[in-house]
Amino acid sequence: MAMPRRSWRRVLSGAALLALAGSAFNFVSTAPAVGRTSELRTSRRVLAEADLSPEQRELVEHFLSTQVTDEEAKRKEKPFPFSEEELIRRAKIYLALNQDDVTAPELLAEDFEFAGPIIGPLGKAKYIEQFKSFNFREAFPDAVNEWHHFRVDPFEPNRVWFTTRGHGKNTGLAPPLITEPTGKVFENPPQACSLRFNEAGEVTQYTIGYVMDRRVGNTGGVGGLMGILYAVGKPFPYPEGQPYQPSWQRTLVNSIVEFLQQFSK
Image 1 (cartoon, one colour):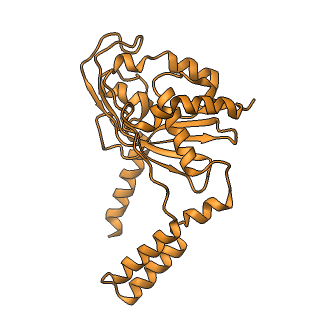
Image 2 (image 1 turned 180 degrees about the vertical axis):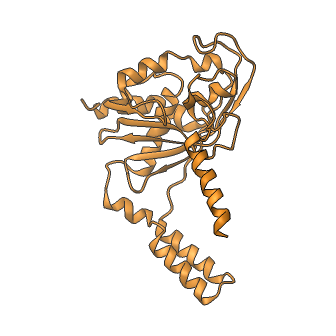
Image 3 (image 1 turned 180 degrees about the horizontal axis):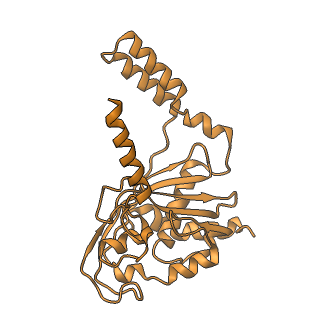
């Protein structure tokens, strides 16, 4: 059942200062989106003034007009009841109230799903149950998620994308995964995350932990909680919780290709 707008208003008004002030949660302020059309015009003007040959300028113009999406026009193809600013505001409020523990389950739709790169999809009840089974803040009391770059997807105007890095030191317990503090620090690689909303303003999907550059940080290129546990010396014992290693099949195929290339030169 959709959450009444009145309930959302109560949550929003009660959390607005927390979500928008930035001091308590170190949120990144988000300026109103600039129209993609004007951005393209600016790009074209700058490129036109660059030291390009006529042929290169033609290629650049073709690229900008055919390969770079006009985000403003794309969003207008699928209107959504909430503005970009309001969706981003709701995303920050959701994170403020639910990033360490699900303290506001009413913000999750009944058909909510959590979908990580390895874990999930999990329904609402299962997600809340698993979330409460690991006390992240007790294990990493100084952890900072470093949420940033909040933006609305032009192809899915009900979806807010944002990026996280994050770092923290393991000085507490979180049994059964961490039975004694390791004193080690984790530094996450940049990870893509998103929240999808329905027309009632409830969250229907939460994705997190999709690594954007596995060479950054000390998690072995693994995202989410699995990467953090790897960094502090408490990795899961299966391959998904370990740094990527090429399979023997890939290694064999690459060796054969390299061998054949030697004779084709």
